[in-house]
Amino acid sequence: MKLVLLTALGVGGATVIGSVLGFIFKNISHKFSDIVLSFAAGVMLAASVFGLIAPSLEGGGKYAIIITIIGIFAGAVVLNLMDRLVPHMHRLVGADTEKHSNTNLDKVLLFVLAIAIHNLPEGIAAGVGFGSEDTSQALLIAGGIALQNIPEGMVIIAPMLTAGITPRKTFLCAFMTGIIEVIGTLIGYFAVNISAAILPFALAFAGGTMLYVVSDEMIPETHSHGNERGATYALLVGFCIMLITDVLL
Image (cartoon, rainbow, N blue to C red; front, top):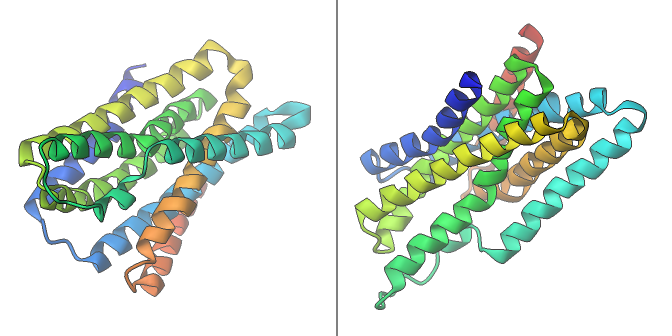
């Protein structure tokens, strides 16, 4: 339990670390952020396949393939529904920044909710990973998610400041999204420990949410600024590093 709690704090803290770097380096180039985010996408892609979906197939018994496929689509559909309820942060970056009486406060709340759309499921994925009792794989999954959180925390700072949100509220927003991820990690961990029977489905569900984030958010974002080639190779490097790590461990 101590390791899970430390991991949860690490995953959530990565967003805060990224936001601090965002304050220090306000003018981060699109090329740099695209390369780093693509590398993180490759790490998350490998972590979802090797750390979540593969264990789901191994532990699902006679109907493993059915349970795993249903779990993957369930995770993607749930995240898609959440995304429809609250617009995601990338759509808010270019929103109208004209100031009105409550505009700044509204933007803060929208950003918190938008980032939480996939921070909560990502946290759950990190927690579910520990349910497989393969600590090394669980740490790899959490590491991949944390790695993705750092550049994400970096790139959201400048747009929020530009939108007129004060530095204090901006940092508070980043901090709250980190807390949300900590909560998600603990939810995932306790859920699979309460009932081991749901573990195969939970693993596939978490894998589906991560695949959705990579496909729907990370890849389109990194291919929208003219850096497609570099972003693609960065993704492959991240995937292969996780592949090597998985084989060695």
